[in-house]
Amino acid sequence: MIGAVSKAFFQTLAGSQKLKRLASRYGMRHERSFAHRFIAGESIEDAVAAARRIQSSGLLVTLDYLGESVTTIAEADAATREYLGLLERIAAAGIERNVSLKLTQLGLTIDRATCVDNLRRVLDAGVAQQFFVRIDMENSPFAAVTLDVFETMWQQGYRNAGIVLQSCLRRSEADAGRMNALGARVRLVKGAYKEPKAVAYQSKVDVDAAFVRIMRRLLLEGEYPAIATHDPAMIDETRAFAHEQGIGHDRYEFQMLYGVRRDLQGLLTREGRRVRVYVPFGREWFPYFMRRLGERPANVGFVIRAVLRDRQE
Ligand code: FDA
Image (cartoon, rainbow, N blue to C red; front, side):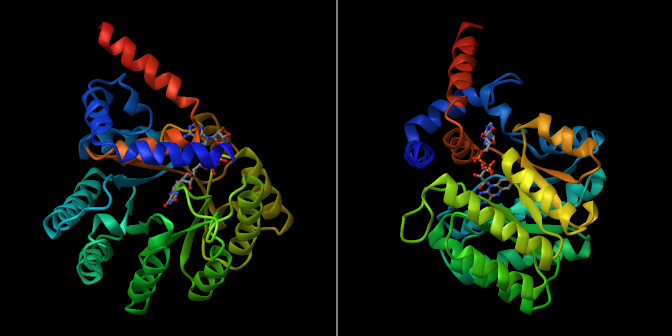
């Protein structure tokens, strides 16, 4: 319940332009500024450098150019070109060819056809350069259309893309069945957005129980699923189930966010398991950052301390 309240609170703050301006002034000023805790930096170079560091510790990466809910065709086109540039840059840097993106960043809120065209541009470039492209899942009004767009691309033969399902949504168990039947790769998460009762479980107990049910289904019938969580209980359930079913470490992976539970990332890697780190970067980091605070309000303390320290320096 507290989790739902804090998610709603930080989601509201994420809409504040004043706070955004203030945060942007302090958040990325230098290496020790607070936003660096969860964001690799504002440039592609920052992201590539972070990815290199992470890979050198034996972890896998996916790079995410931050941005969402663009409101003009020009912005959607700019984000698409940014992704095309990112693919080139990653290929040239020799780091792992794996990116994550959001459909509202490519224009879904403006017009579905524009978004599909932009996604196709990224997927085509991805196919040519052997990239895997994960389509993140946004808040519930976009769930059905995101899955539809994904399935359309799948029917058109694009196999270098995967999708995300959120265990908080009541629909996700059925969606997992649908995605497993296609043979599509799913990333399972709990869900980062405050959602209404009509479509989503409200308590942690229910969200976790659904997570375990979907995880089992994905591990048994799915195509190389990604179990994306920092929750030790969910990780233990996954390990135990995989062990019980004789599912090898190479048949699925864990995923975690940049800067969150690095201890656990290292521990699982040392056990010989695959762990992929989601590395976000870019100037539009504010909403992403606020979602991370909403998940763990205790992190607000470190932001305040960092800002106070910054003002004294
Ligand atoms: P939960 O929130 O229950 O936390 C369990 C424990 O993890 C906490 O007790 C704490 O120890 C630790 N923890 C969690 N968050 C922390 C934080 N911010 N700082 C420090 N510790 C923290 N969501 C979505 O809606 N669409 C998407 O596409 C994605 N994509 C995505 C990719 C990847 C790789 C990950 C790991 C997560 C996402 N998410 C997401 C976010 C996801 O839905 C969820 O909001 C967060 O992962 C937090 O939930 P947990 O499963 O970690 O558990």
